Amino acid sequence: MSNWLPDLAAHSGPKYRAIVDAIAADMRAGRLPPGTRLPTHRDLAWRLKVTVGTVARAYAEGERQGLLSGEVGRGTFVKDPGKSEPALAQYLSSVAWAPRQDVINMAVNRPGGDQGAWAVGPVLERLARRSDLPQLLSYNLEPVAARQREAGARWLRAEQAETSPERVSVTAGSQQAIVAALATLTLPGDSVAVEEYTYPGIKSAASLLSRPLVPVACDQYGLIPDEVERAFARGVKVLYTIATVQNPRTSTLDEQRRCAIARAARKYGSYVIEDGVHRFLNPNAPPPIQVHAPGNCIYLTTLSKSVSPGLRASFATVPEALKSRFDAAIGALSLAQPIPLIEIACILIDEGQAFEAAERQRKEAAARIALAVDILGERVRPGSTAFNIWLPLEGGWRASSFIAEAARQGVSLPPTESFAVGRPSHDGVRVSVTAPPDRATLVRGLKTLAGLLAVAPDQLGVTV
Image (cartoon, rainbow, N blue to C red; front, side):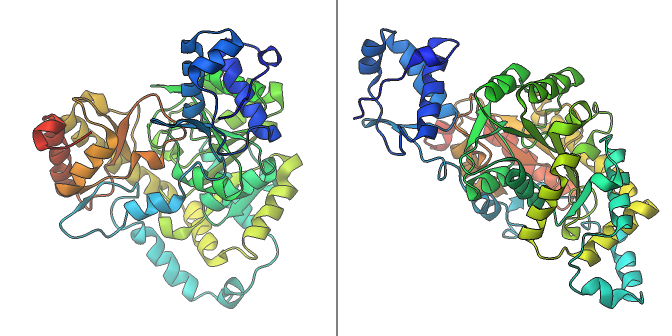
């Protein structure tokens, strides 16, 4: 067991939070290497002249932030930030696009219908007849063409982002943009703040680049701005957030919270990576955080959910001071971009089919959300249209046991832990309403879940 003793005088705020801040600082400085066993609650409380409850609260908060892990009968240990988060592969392996025919897939958030084939197909045919097709298929080592940046700017402005074609970068999907943004804004070891339940892709990217994630407390309305500012004040350099129709909780930040987060970023010289992947689902949402802090925010968006996952076309608006570094990161990730796919996306934007596709997806998702609310009740109603619901658990159920029992009854759900960072303060399950191929299949899946919620787990012989 370590003789570690924090210097609480160096950290402000309540004693329990000062202990957590000291743990994080000593981890960064190498004084608390991964695997270190911390003093017991009673021992540290005696040496710090605080209550045992204060230490217990500090250790619990350290676990929630992903800094520590408690093991029954063994103690509390410092976690390895590079290994603390599960890889994206864990999530992807659980949300197979083609599960067994007897399993209803409610795990993956994807567009409904034919995945945009109605819009993409005709443009593919036209592209095949173009005289410049060999050029489009060649290595395109130079930056994307001005007309493609202009199309990206048009799509970004439709989402109320502040931009110009010169500030637009085109990427092969939003995951590439996320990795490039992290590489641009941080160095190995720098912490990145996220919602306590977040998109698994940011977890995978942060783990790959050795950027430890710090969970920020949320309520039913999303990120709590005071908690974001507190993270920035502790030295966190970047916040990643889906401010509109958050994944998986579906919350949308109001304008007051967006302004407060922007002010905090400006105050501490921190940055926000704002993911607009679901912005099209709530067009009446307040303007992006990026509008309030354009020099401190990279705003990115994609056509994967609104038009077609297969296009792999995404756009980011980047502050001028960061643009060259961001583009260099994109170049390092892929020597050349998939120009034929990007060209198709830009044609769909220019001719309007992309906007029509987004409207179709929004209407279908709204109809499916209504079915979910009708079957599962008002507790699952999101603040706006979404591709999924967040199902809070009750009656003794825990996420892991509920998901396992749902699988046994023929409904596939994603593991809640693939979204969690640290130890979230509440439990629940993400349920996709767009993954089932049709509404009738969706209804069968929802009724199965409703049946599970109607009985206690011990009545089914389930151990929680």
